[in-house]
Length: 178
Image 1 (cartoon, one colour):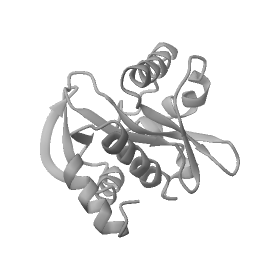
Image 2: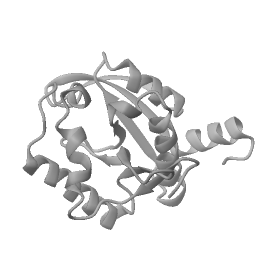
Image 3: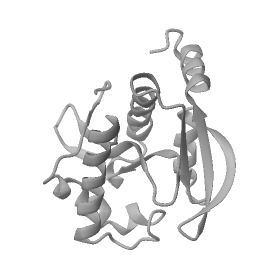
């Protein structure tokens, strides 16, 4: 897939080096692991899960690559969280690329794909309550606040969107559905 500024690419074995700088950055990981860097095994597991999900459902947490430079800057897309039935949209970006709209741009393309091509009926997004930046992205993407729940022993806020509601809102937002 592609957007105005991004390519959204599936993960392949050997792509671990592309996510390692983010997965080992305490600033990126502060709301994911409490700032603890992921191990090499965890990084390999992440890439393997994305490749497996892509093979199974045709979607994943897409690797984001800048069209202009070819630089991999993070990911945005739908995946599975341990212990949760719903599919969850999320994103990680290198801090140098925060505040430039890439999470929203990639997330919107991933949501459209999940709802239109893959036919998912519902997608959620979760984050820690103090992660207001991610909550703003969720709101910009058209997800609505559902409530709070425990995940991995920590309280999270949950945002959600159903396919029908989201596609109707996108049609109204853009005037064309695109």
